[in-house]
Image 1: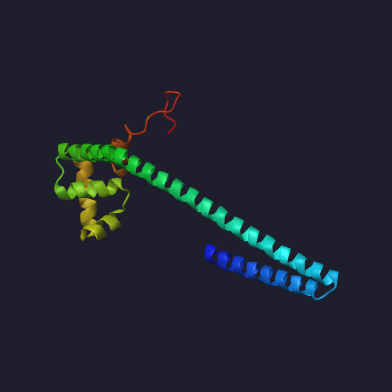
Image 2 (image 1 turned 90 degrees about the vertical axis):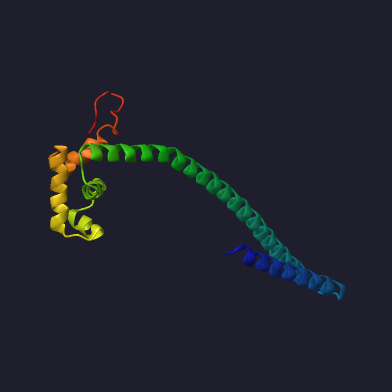
Length: 175
């Protein structure tokens, strides 16, 4: 239920309570039975309790929403900070990978294929992205492995990832 709907419902309940109180006072002045007047007053009080519950709910919802907004704002700040900090590392890694690919004397096409291989794309996906045949992508990947002296995709990935994965506390890698 939205806050607007809660406001409308609270207003309706308040009006009901008001009209019932007025009716109870009128009935009392006209000599109505005390049990009838008591029941009307009870109904009016119940309606007022409903108003109170709805108003409390509105304020709690507003408070909760404010807390969520503050948390979201803090999270967005943390994300931006993390992105800024990690961007330096990502750029450095990207430059290091590019420098190594250049040391292997890879052509620009082979560099592109090597990066796509590192991202985990299949030869078919690489061919589609580069608008070439799968046979061309395979030949370029074989050229990469030959120039680098690596046996295949897993060694290519391991070559770049090995130094990024630090051993855990025992000094031995858990991989």
